[in-house]
Image 1 (tube, rainbow, N blue to C red):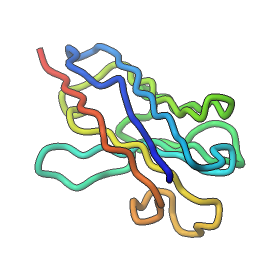
Image 2: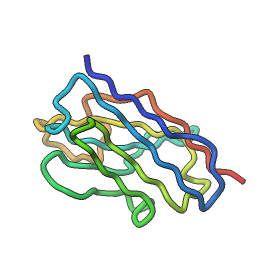
Image 3: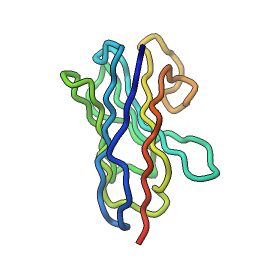
Length: 126
C-alpha cells in the first residue's frame, strides 16, 4: 500500500520561510518522480515543483521560481519543498504526488500522478 505523508505546514508571515517534507512508503522511491501541488481556497489544484526520478534538479511553476526549491533524498524516501520569500498568495494546501516512470504525459498535469498525500496547510499572513 502506497502512502505519501506530508508535514511542515503552518502559519508564517509574508517574507518568511517554511520547509515541507513528504515521506513515501510502499513504492521504490528512486524510480518515481515526485511533485508538489498547491490548492488555494476555492481554486483548482495547481503545479508547483517537480523532481524527476531520472534527472537532477527541479522544474518549477513561474510563480515560485527563485523562491522555492525541490529536493529529494532517495535513501530516506523523502522529497522536500523549501519555500522562501513567502507571499500571501502562497496560502493553501500543499500536496505531495508521485508519478510513475511509465507515465508519458506532461508533469504539469495532476492527472499524470498516481498517488497523492493528504496535504499540509500553509498560511501566509501577518
